[in-house]
Image (tube, rainbow, N blue to C red; front, side, top):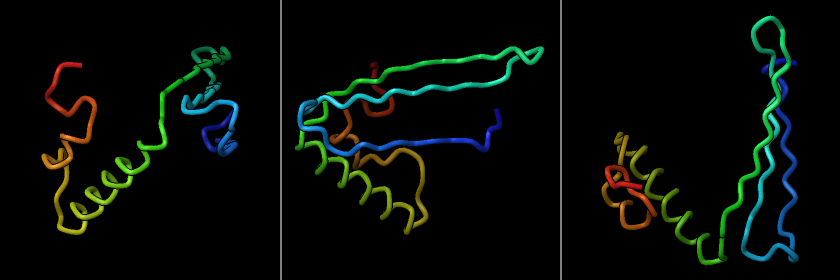
Length: 89
């Protein structure tokens, strides 16, 4: 198993799932003494269609910041984030 083998299989929109999006991750590696390690993770998030606009706005803000040579936390993005940097989760 090499670190150069990464596989992604996007399925696109699945009508029967509706707003919740589910991702299954399987990470396989060699541990100490060549012991095989396997980690299976399932991530589920509620992603209504209205979230796409927020994500597009965040990408535009990040692109504008990069073009102007800024980096790190963007104060103007805080109102769009569920847990902006510096807030307790």
